[in-house]
Structures are given as C-alpha cells and as structure tokens.
Image (cartoon, rainbow, N blue to C red; front, side, top):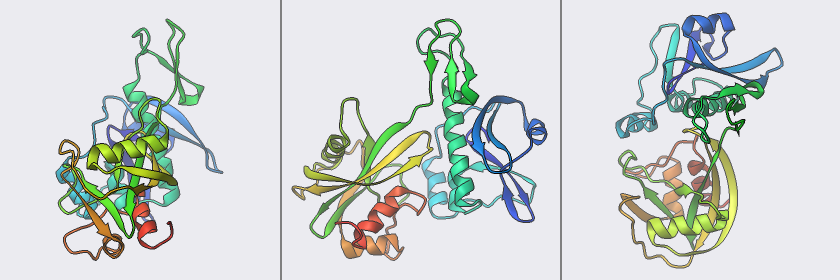
Length: 284
C-alpha cells in the first residue's frame, strides 16, 4: 500500500506486515491505481496507490540527517504505520525480500502518479497489462514504466579513492560520485564525463562493478570503478560541497564507522558496497 511518499505497514506481534487483503486495503483509502507484482507462493501480490496522496520529491536535508544517523523516530504503538521507504530500510523494519517488493511497488506507483496523461496528445490514459502499461484511448499510444540509468563510481589513483559530498548530504557524509546517463552515451563515457564535470579529474579505464535498483524514485544505479589520470581536484560548486581523496585505510575506517567526523552511506546503498569492496581489496 502506497500513500504519497509513504509505505503503509501494520505492526503486529511479529513485527511489521506489508501485505493486506483487498478488504483491509479498502478501509485505508480509495485505490487510484493497482498493479500486479507477482505470486509469493500463497497468492497474488498487488501494489495499490491510494487516491489523493500525491508523491513528493523526497526527504529534506534535515530528514536525511536523521535517517542516515538512525535518528528517524520509530513508529509509535498504533497498529497502522505510514513511513518512508528509507526509514523502513534503515531501521530494518522488514526483511530484505519484503524490502525489495516494497521498492518495486514504490517505483511503479510513482510512475503511475506522474504519467496519468498521454505525453503524445494529453488525454488521460488508462492502465493495462496488470498495471505495467498505460494506454491512450485517443491516439492509441502505449506508455511503459521507465527506469533512469545512473552511473555511480569511484575514481581511484593508486591507493586512494575519490569521494565527494552534495549540498543536501548530512554533515560529514561522503559518497561515491554519481550522475544520470545522457542520451547517446555509453556507461564508460558517462562515468568519465561525470567525474570530469564534478571534480575536474580525467579518467581512463572504466570497469563495471555492480548495480542496484534505486526506487528514489525510479533509477538503476550502475556501479563502476574508474582509473584516474591525475589527482588535481577542481570542484563544480553547483554539484558538490566538497571532494577529496581518501586513502584505502581511511576508506576502510569510513565504511566501518571509525573515521572521526566522517561517514558514508548506509549498507542499503550501493555506494557503501562500492567503497567497501575497494577498501577491502575485493576489486582492483
């Protein structure tokens, strides 16, 4: 169940449950959109977006500070809990399997909430293909859920890696650089361009490392390693507050939470695992 930017859970004796019958869902609000997510071995699983609950654009800097520092308020003792997906993941309120299902539902319902009208002719569209397509009755255009590719990367030079911080990051948080892939670009070109634009570093060889669906709101994070050709940092202040080189020892302390005054994204984020894999020597 999705209500605006929040996921609806219910606390019970075993923790938090995310699956509700259609009868239970009907008591929570009027469904604007419904989509079939799959079968869990017991029955069909559906995502439901409630009416009159617009999606927002994510948490503020202050909210991110509380979330990343595990200071977000825990839900109270009421049976129904409405909270954002980041807080659910950070606080371990559901299993990894359930978290993946909630992320899928969140991303899909965000797309529905932003694509109610045909981009070709402007007429309101209707859902089809069990919620995985929207169709325009006027011009017959078909519209499908989108995924925005984003490269996220570590530029490395010898025994150092480059990390930066965006203005919206909580104080002390450094992460891998990232940016959207542009039309006509290869992933390698996107990695080199983003590092050059944001930090002024030219890079050569680019190696794919891992990927992660990122439902904030609908991206696919594509993790890479890039070999830096120089180490002189020139920051684009419209993109970054700061950027600096971290030694392997510092990066290891960063992911272990032992570098005074600094921290990196939590384990729910691919950035954490990219930094950790390099710091521990798991990738070249």
